[in-house]
Length: 184
Figure 1 (cartoon, helix red, strand yellow):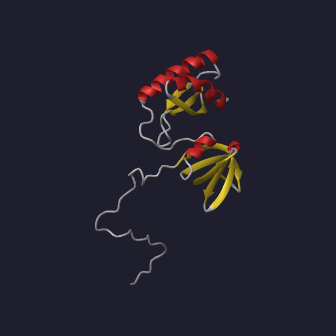
Figure 2 (spheres, rainbow, N blue to C red):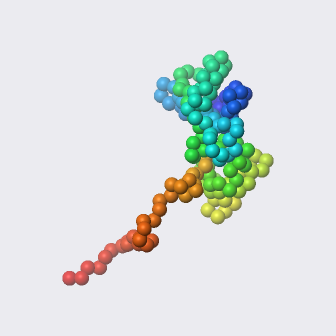
Figure 3 (cartoon, one colour):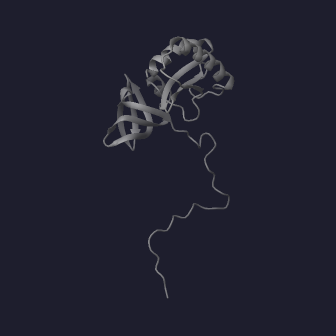
């Protein structure tokens, strides 16, 4: 399944609707699969208010469905899902990573590096098809072609969803571990 070719094919039709095709994912399943197309508003600037709504997704779905019916790039049955990027925005390419330099991301590599496929760290730089990330205090350079999937990690505190300390309560006591001595 060439998801990049599908993204390239649907992008112009989405632009006419004032939308951007962020990327396409394919999930195979029994009796078919799911083709998920992520969209965002062209007016949106990587964090501005607004984004896309249900009406945008419906309009995009109609356009994409019509294009796919003509081109028929997906063999067999499948479900088309059109989605906003959501709070854990997927990242599909260098320019998308570049929009979020300084943000935290989770990246799954196609092949393990130093025994790890899953990385979590701050996006530090994007240059010539390479993503620089600070992972566990170490700078890593990752080629775009090495990435299986990536998405932003929500900043719950900045979004106002971080748990708050209860009034009058100090910091939580550390859990006690180990065996306890019993006096008889």
